[in-house]
Length: 143
View (spheres, rainbow, N blue to C red):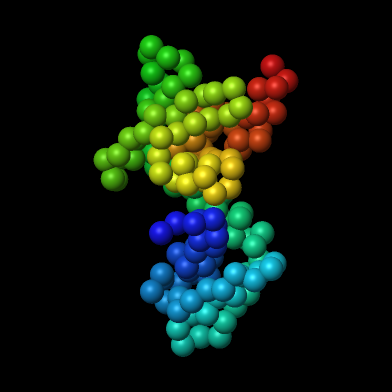
C-alpha cells in the first residue's frame, strides 16, 4: 500500500539508485536526513533524501520519453498520453496552476505530497518545450 513515505523512499527506488535488482534489497529505514538501505549479503548504504527526491523526478522524466502524445482537436488544453508497452492511456489537462492527469501516480502525489508531475505530465511538458513544471509555470506567468 502506498503512503507518504514509500511513495518517495521505496525499495524499488533504492535498488535503481544503487544499480541493484528489487529482490537484492533486504530492507530500508527512513532516517531524518538519509535512507538506510540494507541489501542482502552486502554492506548497508546511506542515501540522502535529496538523491531519492531527484531520482523520483528523473525516473518519471526518463519514462515519459517512450510515451506517445496526441493533442485533442476539440480542446487545446487536453492531451492523450499513451503507453504503447502497457497499452494504457491517460488524459492530461493544462489548468491554471499547472497540469492534471488521471493516473494513479499523479493522484498519489497530490494526496501525499500536495503537488504532482507524473510521467504523462512530463511528456506533455516536453511536447510544449519545457523541461520541468517549474519552468512551464514560470514561462506561463511571464506570458
